[in-house]
Length: 349
Image 1 (tube, one colour):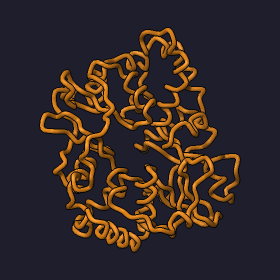
Image 2 (cartoon, one colour; image 1 turned 90 degrees about the vertical axis):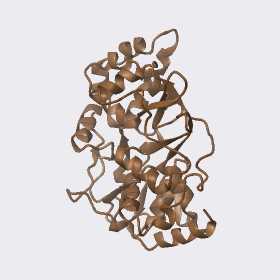
Image 3 (cartoon, one colour; image 1 turned 180 degrees about the vertical axis):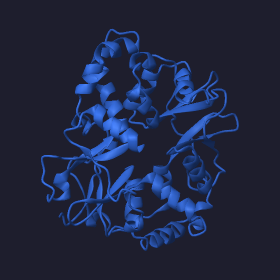
């Protein structure tokens, strides 16, 4: 892909207002209360089939500006990784992961945790706002260049108008494939997304606890599951953690082999001998996005003809490769002093 093509595409995105995205059917973005318990928040997100929602500071009045109203994003990934981090000190001297989890992870302890306990423990928990004048290019820059999974559109009164995710942007491209054909036709190889990189994975015999521990250690949202000869057969992702947080058999589930966990999670529909959702370097951007959206995932593995994984390609990777950041973009947006990639309109409300 040439720089001219990327520049032309980026210029086209400048003409698409982010406010054009459909607002939630309820007319407002659901927020988790800052005084809610972990279990309350998880149950509510599960009710709406959400993986994340902004955390509203209930100690702040309704007319407060956005940067005081919203503390962070409550993210299911952040929840499970925080819980695993809490258990990490108990690793010493234990041979099996579930032995210390059973001791530390008593039901009462989980119920007493608050949503604020997960703030700042994972990059997905960052609350990233743009004002309603932002364009689709602004959204793409944050989602791609700065590796953020969701962007909040904030109004002048400090309320959230919308919550735009990587998935919703990918769906927009597919729904308007003719309009975006100049980009969608390129192959992953032409985008430079076919080169071999490190692929983090666990074997089918690894425990669920070991898979999530690897996700924590490497700050990943998914890991591959490989068979006897290293071929990719499945994945364990952030969406799977909801099953852990809802099950009453938490300890025994954590000690299950990954292949048993996946079979249970998907009610036996997983064939562990078949490859996971994969792409090759010759697949187009449209092919990759279509596979991700059909499977409700945010990444695919690029494999060779023997199903050996070469690399992972995420929505973040694709978005990053197809846009050009305007030279003055950074000067019109701010990054917080902790380097958490939290953006804001320069003129705070």
